[in-house]
Image 1 (tube, rainbow, N blue to C red):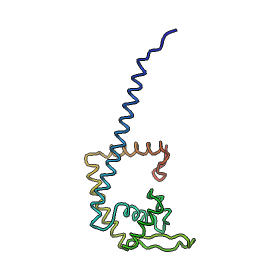
Image 2: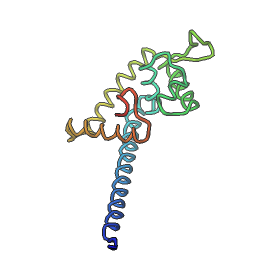
Image 3: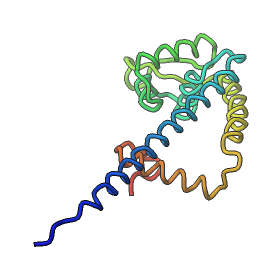
Image 4: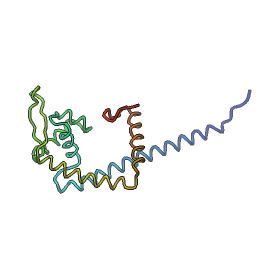
Length: 168
């Protein structure tokens, strides 16, 4: 009986270790990008009296008018308690109005005001500028491929965005 060679085993372990290091590096880079982008956004938004988190909720209100706090929390990936605090600030600043749901008066809904719409439009210009800087030098085909890779990773975690076509 021929004895198995152990030569390939260290190579497999080395390859696994290399892949592990590469995946850690990718995760760290994604975290750094998101953190730094958020800092840049907060710096740009501060003079307008809002934060990135508040704008995230305001965009959600704009995109789904009449949403409840629970619906907004889910769409923004934050807790209902955090959502309520953000909504309170947005309402006090005059960017949203809150009212009773026409079907269930226990549910409080939110709608954007004209002042909130003006803020959203202003912030969209800021975001476009920051995003242009982030993706400078990245081709359209690279960005398409990158988005496909990220979607595959989301599918691997079972958290794919259904509106983006889900997992294939």
